Image (spheres, one colour):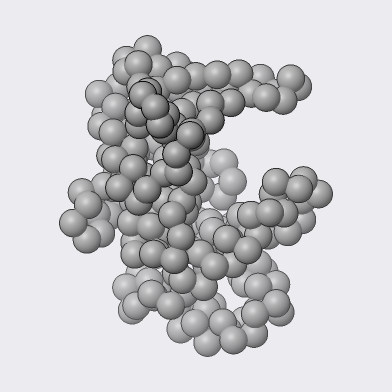
Length: 222
């Protein structure tokens, strides 16, 4: 795995996100940011993401997409997974090849996996001045919640270590909800995501009861 000798800055994260979206577009793909980097673009300031997650609006295999990016732009570097039992490749973007070297991991995902909804590119949003397409706020929150549950249920130490950041990100998003984030404005989201989210929200409220009013304010009667 490529290792940076310097921590990523918020500017680095936005740069990698922008360059990845541009590179994907040159390969014929529409995409949008999600995960912690999307939280950052939506206004999260308490921490800097360590990597970026990109949803590519296609049915193509993520491994095909990674290969296309690496072939088109030498700043995208594919490397085998550190786990010998895994067949997928890791993808990094080289922010700087020189000392200090700076690499940012780029995770490529497609709709239909991990509860990621099918989404028309017209639903992408461009918050603030960054000109970076991101997933809408409500599905971002619900997918963050899915990540928290998955990490809580995992026995992997690296997943367990992500739980405090998951909680911080979710609470940050909850503090920034507005009327546009109500369920009635997101009828395009699959019923399975809403149903599964309600179950996950109940689990979150058990741990953090002070968040119940925020969840109810957007239409989850839990």
